[in-house]
Amino acid sequence: MPRIVTIAAAQLGPIQKAESRADVVGRMIALMDEAHARGANFIVYPELALTTFFPRWYHEDRAEADSWFEASMPNAATAPLFDKARALGMAMSFGYAELTPEGRHFNTSILVDRSGKIAGKYRKVHLPGHVDYDDTRSHQHLEKRYFEPGDLGWPVWNFEGGLVGMAICNDRRWPETYRVMGLQGVEMVVLGFNTPSVNSQRSDEGLEDRLFHHRLSVQAGAYQNSTFVVAVAKAGTEDGHHLTGGTLVVDPNGKILGELDHEHDGVLVVACDLDDTRFGKETIFDFARHRRVEHYGLITERTGAGEPLGR
Amino acid sequence: MPRIVTIAAAQLGPIQKAESRADVVGRMIALMDEAHARGANFIVYPELALTTFFPRWYHEDRAEADSWFEASMPNAATAPLFDKARALGMAMSFGYAELTPEGRHFNTSILVDRSGKIAGKYRKVHLPGHVDYDDTRSHQHLEKRYFEPGDLGWPVWNFEGGLVGMAICNDRRWPETYRVMGLQGVEMVVLGFNTPSVNSQRSDEGLEDRLFHHRLSVQAGAYQNSTFVVAVAKAGTEDGHHLTGGTLVVDPNGKILGELDHEHDGVLVVACDLDDTRFGKETIFDFARHRRVEHYGLITERTGAGEPLGR
Image 1 (tube, rainbow over the protein chains, first blue to last red):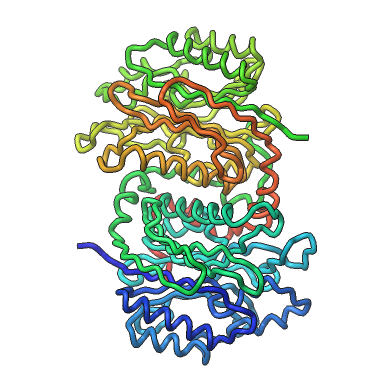
Image 2: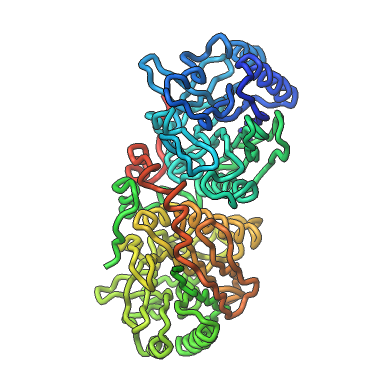
């Protein structure tokens, strides 16, 4: 009997600086209604779904940026989303900026089960960008200024009848992300992203290249770990900066099952049979038979590139 | 000043069981002449370049398979190839089945410098297939019967003015392969392969899918480590079994610079500026700034997939 998870990849169009959480939550609820009407039971929203992608804005005083963060979850602004999900019996995942009671800052996403309970939390490990204002760039990307690297690793949860993990944006370019979850048997990775359409350090790397790298990384991670990957974009021109879009669902064979080609709010609904992950996991990527960890030591021994070992 | 390595990816068409090493070496020399005439200074041949892809044949007595192995390198059959390379001042890499003085068996490739000296040796780590005859498969793939897993890891060498590493065939599907070399600053990975056009355990996975997975893995490995990858096929119908072909050169951006679309002996010549690896290594894949090894532990702690860690 197939194990179907009908997933809704809920892309958000741009969120301008002036938009309130309440406005955005209203848009997310509309997408949830559509996803539910189309038979989905698990909806995934982008990274930092509640606000504009604020790490493009420099605040000399970092505390000023705290207005972009959520000190609790759910909270007054997001309670209607949780209520709606509970009413519809819909599982969900979304990203937000997390401010902990201890004053720590993370780029976070959560899994929320059909009863509205937070079943899993992930904090983004691979923060791109830089700490200080950089006038050599065409725009700023200050994730390293506003967030600490995640401290939770990549747990995989029993969720919606399968093994589900999370990643966020830049994590998808790093094979370690998928492999750590693959080694827990992951069957579906859900991730949100905000990717500027131009490389801030190389103006000739534009939309086409950026989407190419996005698809390449997600498809390779899916294939090499025989898992579904659901990658959900914020899209369109936000605060004057264009984002790539490129919301897609990839199967365990690395093939794209569906992709959104627009830049506004919209859902991509795909029925995923989690048993389709079995073939790859039992044959070419049966890790127990084929991996040779005795030769992988450098992956954890070295952070940066070091001396070549030949001779 | 650019650091150009003009690479020749020297695809071999099929080698039938009855063909002698001398015949094959003659074909390899012809390719080297062509590569030299077209300006190449480094030629790369496929995995197990000297013989048919013998792991498709079952020998109950494994020692019978020793006829496919080389007990020394160079040897009488390959000396003309080494002589030719020395005469032309051509660096080269090729694969062969290695039988050591201690009676050990490896699927090996070597780097040979312009003076004809073996500058580096690699032994295939990720052996696909199975140990015993398997009558559920459409054809046999007995690499685990005839070879031990490599015991040398993935060293990277100073070679031809750059940092060069090797991999073989199935290694290219494993992100650990590229990452271990990426952590040594690799600028060019050379690898040979023999890939059957049909999955022996899934008849509906044919040529198109197999080439898709090949390109996906090689392009992702190149992009995610900002390195050139030169992947060289044995192609065509060998002993009644069709091989995918798909010889290609990929740049550090993950883009295919050139690909052969035929199934016979032929060279793909591409001038690669190794300095093109710098941008990626200094920005998005500056490992020292962005990798978080504290969360990668499972990659070496677990061989096979184990329990999920959520909750």
